Amino acid sequence: MPGSDNRMNLVPVGLVHCSARTRKEMPPEGMAGTIEVFPPYRPALEGIEEHTHLILLGWLHLASRDLLKAVPRKISAELAEKGVFALRSPSRPNPISVSVVRLIRCRENGLLEVDNLDLVDGTPVVDIKPYQAGGDCIFSATQHDRSEKIAKMDPGAYRADLIREAVNYHGEWCPGAAVAVRLAIEATRFMGGDLRRKDVVLSPGGDPCISDALIGITGARFGSHRLDIAVPVGTDPESPILFSAPGIQLRCLVRVHGRDPAEVLSMKADDLFCLQFTREKENKN
Ligand SMILES: [Zn+2]
Image 1 (cartoon, rainbow, N blue to C red):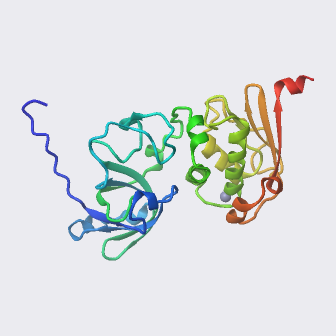
Image 2: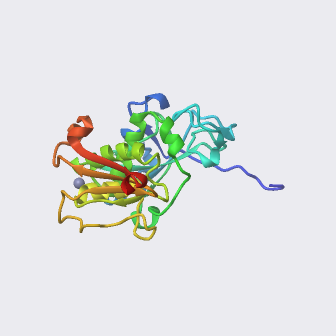
Image 3: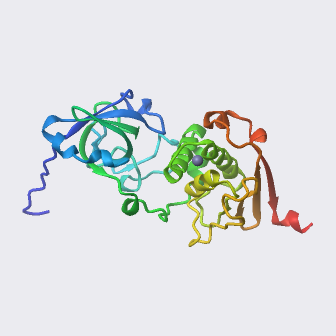
């Protein structure tokens, strides 16, 4: 911009404290940690405890600033290169991160205990804002077909993504949400990839927790004709859950309810649910 001074003065208002020192040490689901807000900025915390979630802007001090294209290597080195504005890569001209964290509590001395933190220890914080579900959550937002990305992803990282999507929508990590995550992993395989694809229709069955979590994972909505309620949710938790796409259908009957989420994650698929996959051709015979 000719004639203008492009300098922008940012001051760190705080610092991240957590047990991950490098990006490699950061688990895909993030971790609990503390934001230390520096003394001059502590009056700005007034009222913050009324919010369950915060938007955190961090300065990714370890990232390079000269990359304009990158491969999302943390997912797979085999994925195609993209521009950094189309990626969540830490490397970018201004290495500012935007993340949504859950506020556990606001302690004395400007310490915010948070969860779902994805910033490494020592990251400077440049701003904190309240997350407002009504305005900030765009549930109808769509993205590219992630089928190729999911196929190349580490299974643990994919599961962590599904857990986050399930909890973000449902509001708690409970046995039903865990069943939904396990079911989504199987359905991803049977349905040939990304469950957020436009042609994947969900009929979520009768269990309220499983239904919520599957809606969060698939992004299915009535308005996009991807959500089909066959039975009123809450009436019959035993009713089948269906995933359908042109020519194919996966029918799932959940065998167990009410177990601990960690136990659900470790159980054999056959013990958890009964799956029946059909193709249209097979139906006609
Ligand atoms: Zn629940």
